[in-house]
Length: 336
Length: 58
Image (cartoon, rainbow over all chains, first blue to last red; front, side):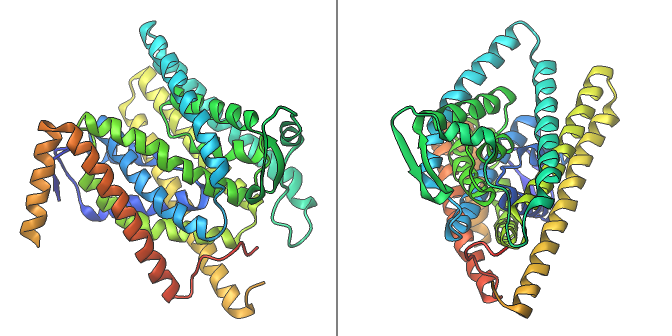
C-alpha cells in the first residue's frame, strides 16, 4: 500500500506484523517499544522523523488497548500513574533542555548514545543479577520478591503528605518520593528522546517497591499520556502517518491481548529476566549504531536494526508459547 | 466503502500539509477511537476462546 503522508510504499502485512510483535512485548513488559518500532520503520523506508511520529501514534493506541486489559486484571494503579506522570512531565522538559544545550556545544549524539548504552546495559545487568540472586530463594507459589532495601527506605521517608496505594501493596508513601522518581525517569526519557517505559518499569519495581504486574499496567497507563503528547507535537509538524499507525494497531490489538494475558502464566521474576534480555538486545543494537556512525560502516548500522527486530520477534514467540502453555495447563488442571 | 476510505486518505494527506492543527487533533481522535474499539473487540474474541483477563494466576 502507498502511504501518501509519509510518501512510502510498504506492505500492510509488514505493518501488521510489526504492530503485532511490539503489541506482544508492550502488553507483557509494559513498554512502548520505540527502540524496536522506530528502527524497523526506518529500515522499511520511512524517513526518521515519520518513523518516530508514526511510532508514537501507534504506541498511544497500543497502550490504550493493553491498559484496558491490565485494568481488568487489577494491574493498573491509577493514583500512582497520575501522580508519577506529573513528575515525569517536568522531568521530560528538563531532559529536553539539557539535550538542546548539548546540541549547542556539539556533543549531543555521542553523549546521548553513551548514556543510553550504560542505562540499557546497567538496568539489564541489575535485573539479571537480581533474578539469579533471589529466584531460587522464593518458595513455590510465590511469584516474586516484592520491594528492595532501597524501596523500603523510599517508603519510610516521612515527608507529608503521604498516601497509601493498595493496588501497589504500598501501605504508606510520601507523594514527594513518587514525584522525584517520576521526575528522574522523565528526565532520562526526555534526555534520551524515548518514551521511557524501559526505565519506568524497573524504577517502579526497584525504587518504589511495586509488584511487577502492577508496574507493567501502571507504566502502560502513563505511556498513553506521554506518547499522546509526543503524537500531538509530531502531528502538528505533519510527521505522523496516521494510516500506517492505524494499520499497525490492528496487529497490536491482538499482540497486546496476548502479551497482557501471558503475564498471568509466568512468575514476576521471570518477566524481569525476559525484560532484561530484551533490553540487552537494545543495548547491543545501540552499540552497533554508534560504531556505524563513528567509523562510517553503513552495514553495521543496518545490522543494528536487524538485531533488535530479530530479538523482538524471538521474544514475542517465547511469550506466545508461555500463553499457549499456560492456557493448556489451566484447561487441564483448572485455575488455582 | 473503498471510495470513502480513499477519499478520507487523500483528505488526511492534504490537511497534514495545509492544516496541521486539525490534522493533529484528528489523528489523536482516530487513534484513541481505534484503540478503544479494537481493544474491546479483541477482548471479546479472546474471551470466545476462553482466554480471559482475570486476577494473576501464577
